[in-house]
Structures are given as C-alpha cells and as structure tokens.
Length: 322
Image 1 (cartoon, one colour):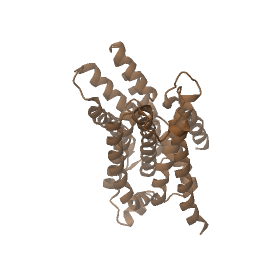
Image 2 (image 1 turned 90 degrees about the vertical axis):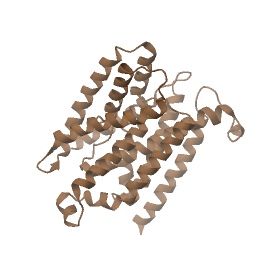
Image 3 (image 1 turned 30 degrees about the horizontal axis):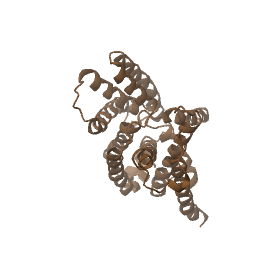
Image 4 (image 1 turned 180 degrees about the horizontal axis):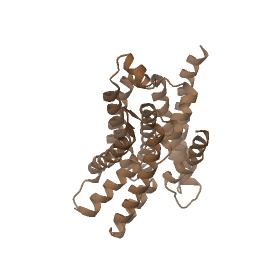
C-alpha cells in the first residue's frame, strides 16, 4: 500500500514543483515582471519568456524519457543521449549541412529535427554495431564506445566549425553549449507534438520494455521478440533526443539524472517510471534554466553548462559505484 501511495504522491509533488518552477522561471532574468502582471497581456511574457520556459520543460521531459528508454534497453545505468554521443552526432550533422549547404532560404525550424535525427541515428548505429556481439549488447562496451566516439565526433565538428563564417560559428558553438535557441511558439508546438506522439507510443508498449529489463533469455521466454523490440525502442529514444537537441542543443546529463532519481522514487516499473521521468526532467531543466538566468546577471549562461555542472558529479558517482 505504501508503494502505491508513493507512485501517486511523488508525481503530484513533481507536478507542483514544475508549476512553481515555471512561475519562478517566467520572472527570472535581467528585467523583472511584477507578480500582478504574470497573467496579464504582456508581450515580453507571452512571446519571449513563456515559449522559452515551455521549451525548457519539454526538452527536459524528452531527454529524460530518452535516457530512461536507453538505460532499459541497453541495461546500462549510465546510458543517456549526451554520454553516448547521440547529441554529438546531431551537432556533426548540423555542422556538415552548414558548411556544405549555405542556402539562405533554408527553413531551419524544419531542418533541425531531421538533421539531428540523421546524425544521432548514424552515430548510435556505429556504437551499436561495435558493442553488439554474441547476440546481445554489452553495456560497458557500449559506454566506452559512446565516450570515445563522442570525443571523435566533437573533434570533427570543431574542425568543420573553423570553416564557418563568424555568425554560423557562433550559432553552432552556442548550440553545442546547450542554448535554448528555438524558443518560439511554432517550435514549441512542433516539439510538443513530436514528444507526445513518440512518448505515447513508448508508454503504450511499456510492458514490453519491462520485459526487456528481465534479460534476453527471460524476455524471449515470455514471448517478446527482443531484437525487433529493442531496435524500435532505440529508434524512439533517438527520435526523442533529436526533437529535443534540435531546440535545446547539446545538453548532457539530463537524461542520466532524472531517470535515476525517478527510479528510486517510484520504482523500476516503466508504467510508473515514464510519467515520473517526464515530470522530473521538466523540473530539472526549468530549475537549471533559473540558475542560468539569475546567477550571473546581467549575463546569461547556457543552460547546458548548468546541467553539466549538476550532472557531472552524479556521473562520477555512478562510475565509482561500478
């Protein structure tokens, strides 16, 4: 009974924290907005701050869901899009496109998710093939491959950036640092639709994800096609990460911290874990955004740096624990 109560009250508490974080974040930054005007027809609030805050929440939720799925399918507690180089692959694809195709009429809002998905998928496919042997993925091998390939891909991206004009160089540099660049209503709506569709599909098949957590032998014994299911879940995780990185840039550790904390709070059952991860990732990102916009006033720090500062110690803790 106590466990069931936690599975109800923990998400409710996260939802309250998320609402409070959104209200604080709306008033964070150089220009303060009186509390009485938060719900008034304020152009700065409605057209600039609110889309950015909602983008942060959605990016946090999507990366957290992606990390939870990657950890479940690969059975690797340290798997997440940033550490495995999935985000770095997205950055490389965007850099290649900028260098070799500098068309002025390009609709970046539509191109970014496609480029991010192609780059992320390509990098993870290489890691998957290198870490897959004897019919299964080796978790530690996947982690080492991810770290090594991420460094190599980041180096290639840096080399390509040296060929860019100053304006494009600054754009890619800020993207890599984790800047919420696409914070407008069209991008927020597209991101919300993409995350909702992919997230709903993953949640619908969450029982299959629970089965994969049992290991290949037991999962096969209860009738799960482990290879097909694993590939579909991995595609879903990469799609979630691509949607988020196309707007939030190269964020790391968000998909690591939130799933771990939520797993401790609500348990490993993905029927309860996935909704908690969506809320927990949103809470983490919105409070990281508050720190980024207030600690160094009048300057603003990329939220990706704040997320890395918060997440790096936890990653080191997991490495030592392993």
